[in-house]
Image 1 (tube, helix red, strand yellow):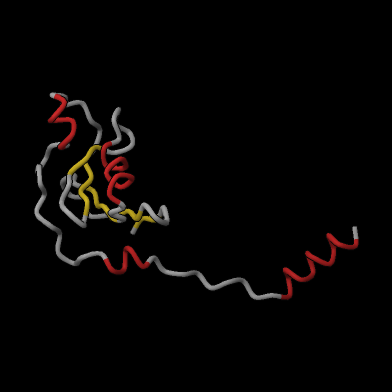
Image 2 (cartoon, one colour):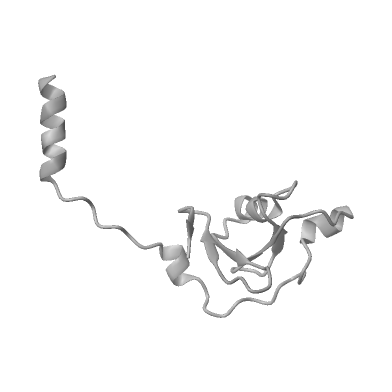
Length: 106
């Protein structure tokens, strides 16, 4: 019990670490690359499928893939295959971006 109280006291005496920014989002290009397959998931199109929920575009190379709510989750698979860390929504009227490394949206 003494050890638990000692750890709890130490936690309350130390300042909480300052929140850190996401280097990947900060360093993402200000201008979007040209979409390789505008309005279409590249891999789904190659498979002859047109059943996806939403599209996401890689800010490193312009790859367009379907979101994680879609059956194949090609946008996340693109990150896993390439390590390209940031994508943005490729839906009309949406401009948010997502960092796969930190699971952060801006």
